[in-house]
Image 1 (cartoon, rainbow, N blue to C red):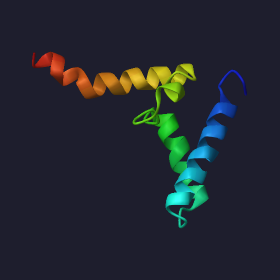
Image 2: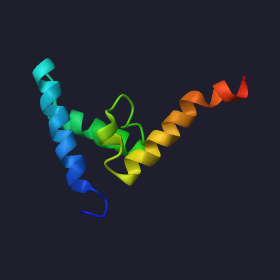
Image 3: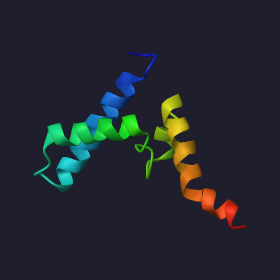
Image 4: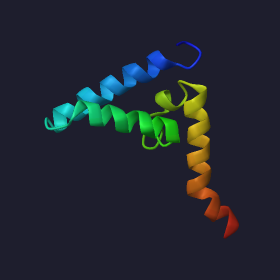
Length: 79
């Protein structure tokens, strides 16, 4: 569990779910958690997240760099 930072992701997913439920009580928890872990698997989970979350795990840092590169690679190509 520690090697893959599972506790970090479980805590964050529950925190995000509770925050989302405050804004939209109709959120389906199972769907929310499924979407959360799919975005984690796909490396899309760091978009629009705070720096403390991004630096919290190696997977988050790698995902952020990949997303950053995808977003800004066109700028370098076009000067």
